[in-house]
Image (tube, rainbow, N blue to C red; front, side, top):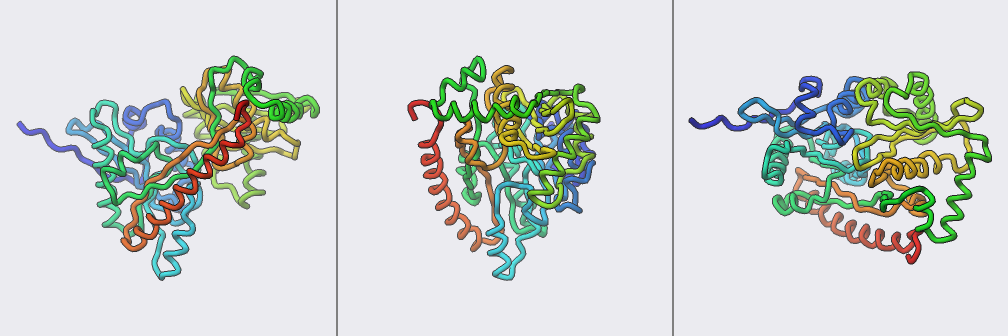
Length: 384
């Protein structure tokens, strides 16, 4: 008897997939690819057609109706909230009278964090072949629907996939990550820095005592509704100054507080028992992901304390290997966060534009390789 082939399809609502079925395939450790995180984005209308993120997720099941692969996908009507910037590509399209939007995007909305996007069950042996097969299927779908292109953001090193499909274009960028070299304490970390950099960090950390502040670290059910209300006000203050409007709704965070609280570390600064600033982080077994922060009023160096130094201290105390503090920010280098390569994959429907973009990406990769080497010359560690 010949078994029936695997079946795949696309869905416009992650709620149509059972949370346990999705998570059994995607895993529970990485917070951003869990069903709960993606569902909170949709249920809160943070990622929706109205906000330019129409869900179009790929699902594959085997002949026993068990999910063996997933890929978070969105039809995008803009390029905001992605952190892999292709606005110049869109401008070039429009100058030639072509529509760049809508496009098909595999990403975690508003989350510049590297992780699997084509997620294949651990039960499958040849994961690379399956990933290439899935990408090719999504490309075939891309050809048939009204989108200009297909993009996979913040992938692990994708060269093996690129070798299997030369039509795919690889893009390279840089983020700044802190690595835990088995430090026993924050002072142990400081000892690895040059004297000058060590003094700067110690001076910046004085902002706690000099402003009579206390720091609280909260996880899971220790984060109360009062804390969430305060954090969201901080978030609104920050987004209002930077972008003019918030892209994540309050309901998104409240949803996460019910379904994913054990993956959240909320850091709060208090002055005379009154909350004045906060930063939200997400946790896996190996990583701490710093995501958002805000303050009610400006306190010099408090941003560095809450977003960088507290994260480092927590990572050391809990044997977490890497701290990722979000997109960009060369100022992180002087605080022990070193430049690391990040990658994305792209497939462009228009062949002329595909060739032009590929030429641009080759030049960009050379520039980012040079940039990484140049930045490493300014590392704060001794003997650098």
